[in-house]
Amino acid sequence: MANYAYLRVSSDSQDTQNQKFGLLEYCNHHHIAPLHFIEDTASGKTNWKERGIGSILEKATKGDFIIVSEISRLGRSTLQVLEILELAAKKGISVHIAKNRIIMDGTMQATITATILGLAAQIEREFISTRTKEALAKRKKDGIKLGRPKGQAQLLKLDNYRNEILGYLQKGINKRAISKLIECSPSTLYLWLKRRRFSL
Image (cartoon, rainbow, N blue to C red; front, side, top):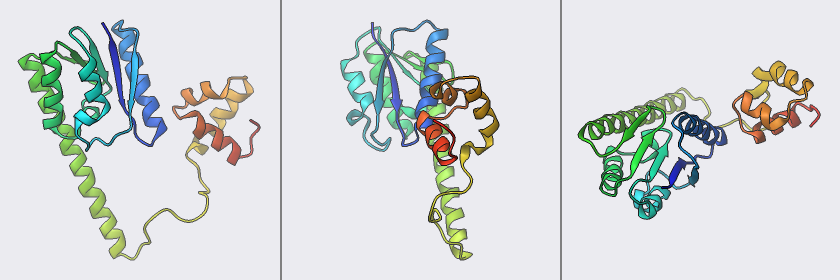
């Protein structure tokens, strides 16, 4: 039996780490091991058969597990999600949704739950997209220049954690461990230390 942890990776490394932590916590709680992490950089708009999840379903066999952080990681539309779950059910593969603590095993109840979750995720994405477009249009109409200002930002995201980070450093905690404690990627922490001229 194989356990596939599927990550649909965005350009935000913190998002990737959060997915991994969520999956590891879920799998530890349910004694699911070992895990084969599959990172997928393809857009959710790409047909699922051409993404990493398609490759997993092609090689997975009866009794295998596929674990994802949330149902929206499977696909950007409810139809895509249901197609994936239908094939998984036919092959006897269980799909675990870590965030919701539910198992999609092909039963009617699981299918109804998947439909509701997938539809909710799709509607939320459309609302966010609409609100973003409306906000950008208003800013443009008001004569506000769009885009990131030139040059380096004066205020950095990790500035709010300055005292916490310095406290950890003084205690001799390594940088990678600190990045986990403040929930950011190691590269973000290293960049912040460099920008703020703290000793690496």
